[in-house]
Image (cartoon, rainbow, N blue to C red; front, side, top):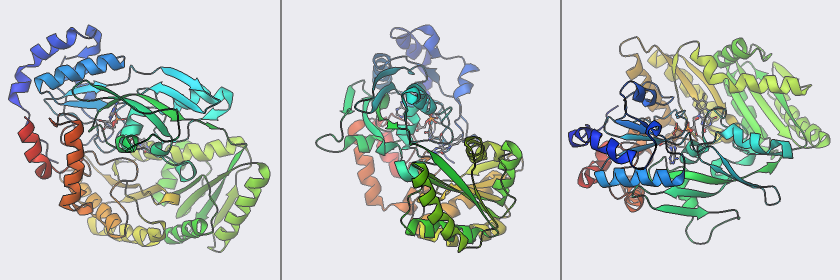
Length: 479
Ligand SMILES: Cc1cc2nc3c(=O)[nH]c(=O)nc-3n(C[C@H](O)[C@H](O)[C@H](O)COP(=O)(O)OP(=O)(O)OC[C@H]3O[C@@H](n4cnc5c(N)ncnc54)[C@H](O)[C@@H]3O)c2cc1C
């Protein structure tokens, strides 16, 4: 994976940059020691690493604005960072860039239960948003598996999803407004505590913009009353494709579960060893969860079980208690950590039409044999968001490159069957060079023209999203 050559003129001005930053923020918010900056050298895509020039940790919108204005004046690139859990290398620094971390912006600013919203600083973690409102019987719906650690800032930048997004939508469906600082220090308010803003949907543009357009410092989020109850059912199959066909049939039948999660045998075994969730040992497992009153749950599960039976499941087990439900979900939500105990892996994030699941799973199995690398599949099957985990050995020369090549072929397959390169993890550096497999040059030109408006000097989050050869002219002209 190529990155631009660091600009020696910026590297030489590090002492001047530190002096100027000290005028606007406390010393302990500026991390310049090369050993300490290594804490920011990568995100959760650990295959790629590069310590930044500096890291800064502002505590409010004004400090973010001051930092950006100084970096803008000096032509220094800035990489916004939430909690660094991106699986796409979205928060990967360059040697000549400043990491702007929002971890200190973690306050709740306002809660309004009558109008069902909460306003928070963007560094607040996803799970602690629900934590702030659950006593009043509310929750924040988007639930990435990383929700204990990841920040609302990163969720907005990546338009993150999670297991329950089949019913509640992803971040964009639950975001009402943001405060965002442009690279030149200007502060913008977009949207607010109402249904939809007049004019262009700029909020929709910001959500999923991967730190390319501005730094989000505050967010107004929709909160929802907790459902009366929820119950998952485990459905085991002796064949991946049959499990894929069952998902397709459940969706076709018009029932709307909150989640349909899929795991194949390697993943089931790893999760069971890790979380002791009581998973059966079979080829493929679905977790299907529905919500509502007891009567509503019984009715929906009745339909789902009837459909499942037509696919000859080897296991059909409805959760009998809140404890059992929690265990089932703990197993699934531990999947990435559990796989990490077995081997190095790269987690992909393609999206496909649900009806293509059986075909795509078959092709991935064939490709796994062709490339000689094992794959474990775990994904949000209900909305076609696949997460094949390719296992490789980072210490074996050539294995990472082979894994990257295999991953690229899987993502191209997703595009070929009518899907796209990313469902929820974003493009980052990981899928940057595949963007031309998804978009015509004219489409990318329009997307880059949007960045020109927000960040004319192309200083925010450099070398992400757009293939370097496509964005070179703009980046170099802006230097
Ligand atoms: C174990 C594990 C499980 C995961 N499960 C899921 C899942 O179920 N669903 C899912 O969607 N993702 C998942 N992820 C991926 C990741 O957690 C999400 O992409 C998350 O939203 C990243 O948040 P973060 O705060 O860590 O952002 P970071 O990794 O710090 O940054 C992500 C992107 O956001 C940008 N950014 C950060 N802060 C700002 C800001 N203030 N303003 C503008 N841009 C900003 C960065 O520049 C970068 O491009 C998982 C990751 C791991 C490690």
